[in-house]
Image 1: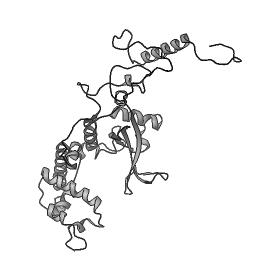
Image 2: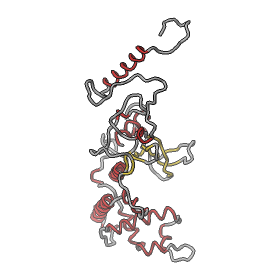
Image 3: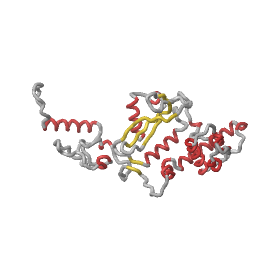
Length: 310
């Protein structure tokens, strides 16, 4: 390219393009991407403007593979297939056509998670009964797997059939009655399980101010297990997106957010890593306030954290 600023720019010459490609390759090597002398990495060609650099098949450009060049859409050389079998992107479990919503639900909230809830609830109930026997006089029995599933199901149903008080779900008044509740579980048993419901061992919790204190310690194990299920059941394409979403909530929690520009102004903010092509959420994390950002800019911290988690 001419050094004169008065002459019309006619484009880069071939040697200038080659030098730019070489500089780019060196940057990749400095960052540990690719290696000199690699037999699997193709030589970078010089393309004409009319060359097709991306195959005209969408799923070829969007899936994980090893044969790539730096001109391809995205940066495939930053990634590798998830499993040892190099499985393709998309759902990991293909269910039969006759399967229903509950079968998909079980892929994510499986028996391992429910057993964890049962064990922690049993632990907490025994602790409370031992420490405060006068306040816990009702006979307690460890919930069974079907029972804890029924309990969780009724909690979901309460979000659909909203009543002002919990006890009204067991009302026999024709105007208020919801028969499914008393047919599924006695009210006193539901309230007892609700009283002792727990997801973690309080004895392992660190106090505020401790370097390893986690404001989400009560649900951290469940959140981690759920994220594991989400990652296991779907392999995302290379196009992913990180965004925030709000869970409506006006109760008492110190990391509750107020975002006046959002449709949901009050609530708990969630960061989500999603596959851009399908919208499938691969990983989530709860934003707990400024303490959730030890250093650097918020955007940089979130992207790095979600990338490592997902």
